[in-house]
Every structure is written in C-alpha cells, then in structure tokens.
Length: 411
Image 1: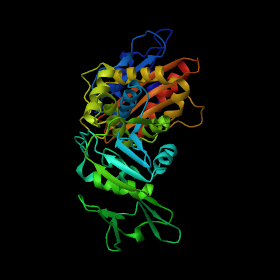
Image 2 (image 1 turned 180 degrees about the vertical axis):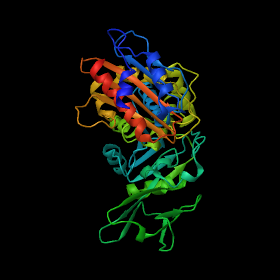
Image 3 (image 1 turned 60 degrees about the vertical axis):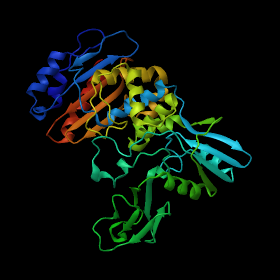
Image 4 (image 1 turned 120 degrees about the vertical axis):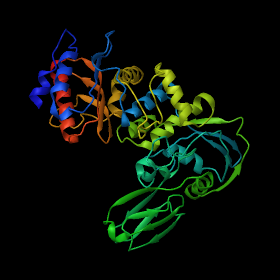
C-alpha cells in the first residue's frame, strides 16, 4: 500500500505541487477507499500560489478539524480571551461570566485568575447576556455521560464534570463533593447518573485503584454559583442586573487553551471559546453567534458550522477552507507558537519533528490538517479529509502517514 500511495504523488514544478490526476487515479483504484471520498489540499506558505490537490472544494464532515476554525476565529478576534468581567467594591468582587472554561478545571490551570478571585471575601454574580444551548445540533443524546460531551454553560467550572478517583486504599474521592453520590455494587456501569438529575451512583468494584473517571453533571446557574462558593470558600450572591462600569480580566494562558483544543481535542473548551468569541463582539455568550463571526472572518459563507468542536455531523467544511484558515493562523502565531499548540508527527515515529496538525475522527471519517516543514526547508499547509470509509481506521492512517513522509522528503 505504501508503494501504491507514493507512486501517485509527483512533483509537477519547483514547488512540488500534487498531481490531481494521479491522486484521482489512486483513489479510484484503491480497494480500501472504494466507498470513500478523499480530498487533499496543499499550499506552500509565504507564496502566492494556488492551492493544489484534488476535490479541494468538496464539502466534508470535519469532525474535530472544526476546532481549527474555532481557534482561527479566536485569534482573528484579537487573540485576547476575556476570562471574567469584574468590578471591585471594597472586599466584594462583582463578576459577570464570559464563557471562559478554565476555572477550577480538573485538567487545566489558570492560577492567576483563581488567586485573584480568592482574594475577595464576597462575590456578586451578575446575570450575563447569554444565548446558549447545553448541547449542539446533532449531538448524540445518550453521550451525556461522557467527558467529551460535557454541557455548555455560561461559566464552566470544574470542566462541568465530577472527577472520581479510586485511591490505592480503595476509597473513592469525588470532586466537587456537593452532589449526592451513593455506592451501588449491583449496577453494571462504573458510574451512573439520571439523564436530567445530579444523582450519581458508583460501583467501586468496577473501578481499578488509581483510575480517574470524569462524568458530566447537569449544569445550571444555581449549581455554578454553589460550586464557585465551594471552590473559592467565600459567600456568593446573585443579581439580575447587568454588570456595568466593569473591567475585563484577560487570560494569560491563551496557548494552553489553544493546546487543550488542538492537542487534547477538548470539546467543551472549544465550545466555550466559540461562545467567548461572540461575547467579544456583541457582549453575548453564544456559540451560534460565535460561529457566524468565525465564518465572516474566513470570508466563506458556504461552510456549514453547527458547533465549535466537531461533535455535530451537520458540520460541512472544505479542505481548501481549512488550508486558508491554517495559513492565517500561521501568519498570526508564527512557527514557534504553532509548534507549541499543535501536536506533532501524527502517528509517525522514529523521525524528528516535521509535521504539526489536528486530527478529526468520527465513525467512518478521518481527517488530518496542519503544517509540514520539509527536508528542503519549505513550509506547507495541508488538509487531508477522508470520509465514508468502511475499512479499518489503521489503513487510512497508514495512507496519510505515507503521504506526509513523501511531502517531507520530496517537496
């Protein structure tokens, strides 16, 4: 298969553009991709070259490649991420949410923000302007129990999940600990929660010592305030009135946020960033409005975005649009930050770092888009989108790996 894939890519000029004819022939003859759609788009950075490839304007299911556009939208909106709106009155901190997702998060840290909030003896929570559904269109209703589909909210806290740890003395530790949690040795699931209630039951016998489980809780403004009060160990009150004459606390961990989205593929953080983009423009926490801003920034109103993470199968994106977005991200961030926020080398081992990109996978769909630094010192953006395959995913990954190594050695 490696030989077959290498043969279809040839250098047609000094900049090693890809032969669409060869790619098309390979796709039509390859039995592993018989029922697949395979667009590939490649463009050299810093050159006024057209995008080369095949089916570059075909609309595809992007899965988590959607996150590239969310990060692009955030950077285009100023690369400044507001964490909270606030006003100080003596020992009282008045705050209004921004959709910011790092407060008390079990995996990520914003120590400066938390230290600032903790320095006040009382917090007043002002109702924000928010237009936010808990789930995106076409999200699977029965995935509510998985970390990857934690609920959206105006002020995510603890990542909107409980963390369950079985310690080596066999005790169970649950964080946060404000919810009702009982043991049930008869249930077949490690953790169970009613769909619409925060009543959790755990079967400790099914959890190994040292394991950590993240399980979403049902969000609400009241629960958020209770969790804020518990985490910051301070009193908290609520006001319906909009917070006025406020200052904005901007995050100083932007790259950690981008890395959580691009490297860890964290869905809630990506959804929260999309909502945060909206707040910066129109003072409303809204994923839908954030997506419109992203599309306007990309100047491509034919793309269809229904969420900021790629969970929705309604999303449709062209590889050419991903390439243009990646090119603009590079112009904003430069190579050093690119290497910091994108994961490296796909599944390729035994070689120095040469490719940084984002995968996107849903059943029968796998995509990989990013940056290649070649042996000849050239830099490319690319998008490889393979949809509707029925063969094993490892076969698809092998084909993509071969293409990446070919570009590295020959472009």
